[in-house]
Length: 301
Image 1 (cartoon, rainbow, N blue to C red):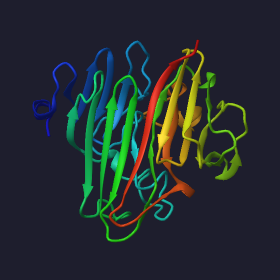
Image 2: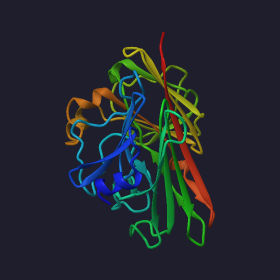
Image 3: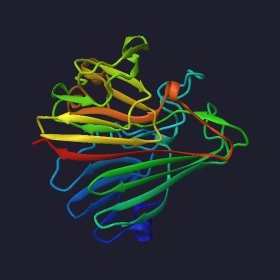
Image 4: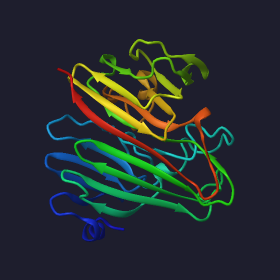
């Protein structure tokens, strides 16, 4: 559907509009000083900035906005596998819904200062030769003083299905070398940079000094990004998610990524909510699984 038709059907005066970006369409939210953006391709949130704050969600200045291409940054939806498909090495990285078209079903100002969008994707027939299961997914995003996102996956197969999933959130930070992550102490993680070795996180705040690609298993409900340079804490709360993924490509790998580049990586860190590896979801026939995260910003005084 074109931006013009979406605006006519779903637009909210003074709060929600739709604009074309090349061959894609972006929903633009602006309400009471809060701003947000979401691309209908991939249902990808690419911007959220509460009133009076710096942007909280990072999107690469070199991101490619084109049909069939996942956006570098924002909150890509990872499903039904995380990273490489463990059973099918030729399958695309991170599944197939993050670059697929989603259908906007609902847009509303449900509460003062908030705009909620609900999008869906459905596969009655196989969407991928690497994962032939029928399913329906509904993604609900609420932009407001906090950012809330929920992915609900429904099993439309006549048997149990298994899948991995993640909300691959890129957070904007002052300087990757000056921020830390807390809330994961004592948990086991798979260190994908070090041959997928399993390690235990110590009690010190996590401060990255090089490339990091870690899948933390059985994690607590809350993790926090401490950013003293910008004098703020980004608080990430999750439900229906047993994994937390921490990622930054660092210098060499970032330079080889044309949609990221040699410098942008210093202003981002991914702290992702998901169910990956040992925490993959087993969903009974006809069942529904809900994965959600809520992001808030607190000032450091």
